[in-house]
View (spheres, rainbow, N blue to C red):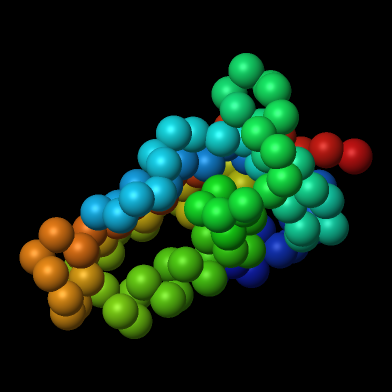
Length: 118
């Protein structure tokens, strides 16, 4: 339902603020990704300065990547919570805990401030 509504908008180029956290070594600081035709082409800090080449964990979470993460985590997690943007219908928040593994196998992803680009 939400994915179809997002795809119907035809937004292929945009900027998105993404932050990721888990019981892992990845940085949880937010970053801005710039997406053109569904591919991350730039990674910036929140002041707009380049963070170098697009890379994980941020580059994984284009809007389509967020939808894929919802599906994947729903299959693998004991519990998952997802929230969607009321204007554009993309996932803005997902969090959960793993079904198996250590008790500290939690994760969260936050996405917001989607800005369509021409």
